[in-house]
Image (cartoon, rainbow over all chains, first blue to last red; front, side, top):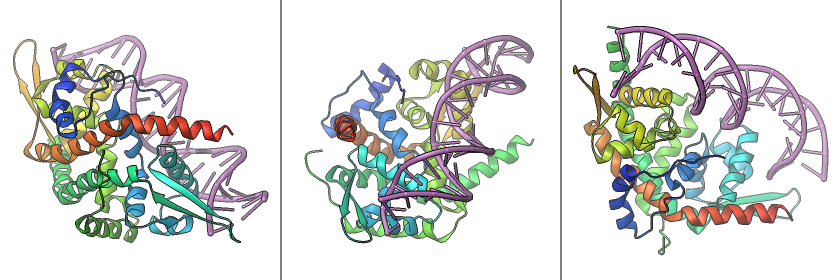
Length: 141
Length: 141
DNA sequence: CCGGATCCAACACGATACTG
DNA sequence: CAGTATCGTGTTGGATCCGG
């Protein structure tokens, strides 16, 4: 997990307004953007966050909620989210065993901005697809 | 942040729609979330969007703004963003040639939700790093 | 200054089989 | 039910050289 990307003065200036509105402090030694975006930008994290945002899910429920995820990636993505403190895992020693996953408070705090971006994606999906078609056609000229 | 944000009914409604489009079809091109998130979730798109959000940049400026990006990925990511209609490319026939990239109106419309997520990332970066340390230490037991 | 073309290592991801 | 283990592969992305 290497990411030496720094916030250059350029990007820093762009982030100023953001940081102000949040009241946070800029840590220029690392790049928070990539450190977090690389995780939520992987293939399944955001979808699992959305699923868990509606209600806690058991392992099998998640698998049914996101049908085309492989069991391997479901396990791995859940462990990553848990390591980041976004999801908590609760084992019930029943027979057969059942495990429940739910968002932590920090995980819940991520939902509004995440859903904001997803709403944008859903709203502009058609326009983006059209832009891709136009671009491909223009490239053929 | 300080105040644990709760999920509003609006958010829940939005998530319902999202999950419908996720679970129904296996065709990933029809899932707005993945189709768009897979693009902005790649290694450099979001950083370039932030850089271009502050002001138009020339190719070399972008390279200096994001020092760790390779020339190959800068070219490729810019072309993808252009294909999606998020960035426009303007060539000035000077000698030597100069090329300016700037956000399209759709690209600008993406900035608020994108910056919202980045603000969250910046605000919670320290907490996430600590959670990863705790998780690793606990796993060693 | 801007970018294309090629080669190659790393890894994310899927499929499958096995366990407690 | 809830995972782990192993293998194979398509894709990502960095390094480098070349061209207009």
